[in-house]
Image (cartoon, rainbow, N blue to C red; front, side, top):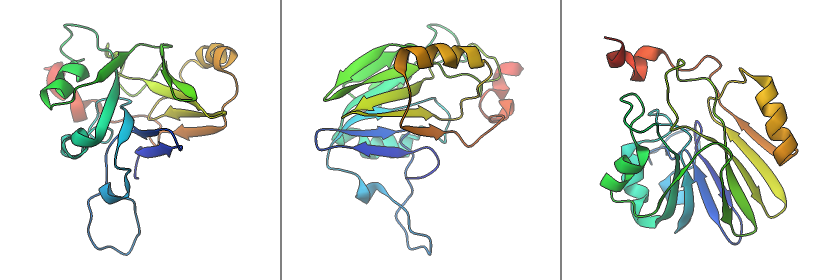
Length: 188
């Protein structure tokens, strides 16, 4: 759907990762928009709280058709790591699932596992971020939006637990967003 927004669908389930959708307008380049989504989205997975991965305008559009939304659990009481769960409750979402690294939730014919998300946040103590491993109907997918492999041994251990992956989605940023983009006010 654009940047990091990906739809996974089977006959039993629909999963939308990083819900930032293109607006509908006439253009020379074809693209998927809100109109291309299924009637109901079983799970929305949010990797992290940067504006190119979670957008209020899109969330409000999706609220009525979303069964569950999955986010990383924040470090309680830390200014730079606000609770995505509280934010989404304020927007009117009813079923918000917070996950920590290596926790899993069962889905029809598979599971979703939160994977450690390294890099991108300038070594600030932010825990409300996850990459996601989806095992569904005999296929495995790994969504690593904006993550940086700064510790290969960690992923060796994860590979031993989860095994090979059929489809890998990597972030497009190699160094991440500038600190001033989201966190600048915290440095004053």
